[in-house]
Length: 400
Image 1: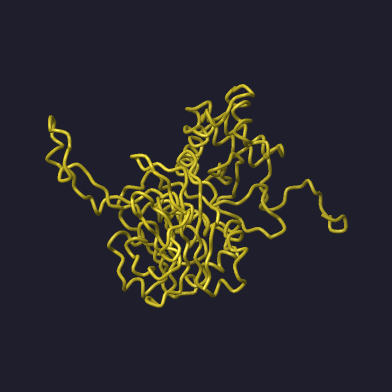
Image 2: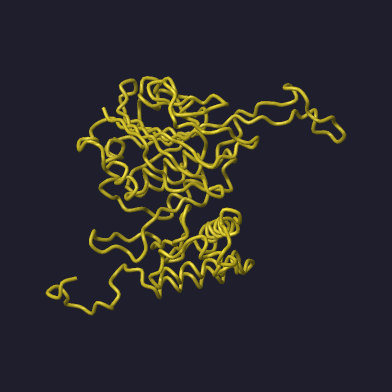
């Protein structure tokens, strides 16, 4: 800051600033919690990354460094052959999630460890608005943790609502540019999530001593029971976002959504909803080909390089592709947003992008300046690291 403007002690904390002392107090609260007392390694991991960041050495928080400093690995160890750091980072994220969903709900400062990296982030609870020239000591990040364990529960909308009303994100201008058509409607925004088809064992084979299943009819389609975990995390993120921008919303689950609903209110179709409502989107440039052998995103119906490789029997994937669409749809007359991945990970990444001001700003950087008034499609790619999505990257776009 120029000396002419320096009318205060530069070392004095400013209103709303997250100081190192506040971060250390928050860290102590976390480390003393039941979630972390049970794991000395998780305590050491979190303390190391937080203190290293506070010391200004966040760039040094690489997998190899943590492996050596926290887990005692030799300097020559190869992280690609030793997943200890990645696995422990995932465990730390889940323990933080559990803590802030329970005992730490009212903590004034929240510490997070974003997926895909090891530099912690910090935010106020609730978030405190800031000027463009005075960022917080750590980057702001939305929190979408509460529903991870409830992804398969059909009554999950109650949990989503409870989480969404905890705190409100900033109504950043770039967010309002994207969500403006939905926010300006007099009707609440509909967040639409479909059930995912899952097959369960026929009850007649569940008795003790029954033969193992061997035929198709040994299984029953459970069409109204399960929702994808990534779809639920995306719904939690979006409900908090919409609520934080002062807009009412309703959650529509499964068959509760009708075409009349789509004509009456701005709607967000999340995850598997895309396939159910594919007739609304079959004229768009980018779409899905969900054939089991090579699921991919197509370009005017033609194959592309945005295809998932052959997957294991448990459908594990190390990457995913997703579509983000913001459409003024002629068939419904209302704004329509579609967020869907080839798998649940892409859906989660799509919701992450449209709720993060910095990521959305970067995604829209190369688009025409009048994109807020037009239809937009984005093709995203995300890596999946230890079961969690990394920051999504835009690989293609279309505006019309």
